[in-house]
Length: 82
View 1 (tube, one colour):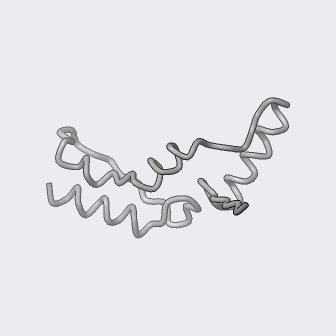
View 2 (view 1 turned 120 degrees about the vertical axis):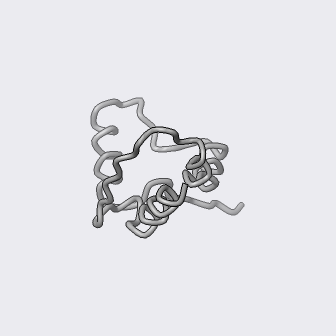
């Protein structure tokens, strides 16, 4: 049997949040469905840019552990070109 483990949200902050949840409830389980994992890796917010009609305020966090600033900048550039 081959077991594969994926980390949905990597980084120390995500880990600390998971441990906090575990302390709050004995029923909390650190797991997601395969469908959720697949949708997570397919998600790309840039595809929704043409649908945005309102002004956008975007703040890019240079030290974000989950979303690299380069990805945020890519989204920002797409917003500027709409």
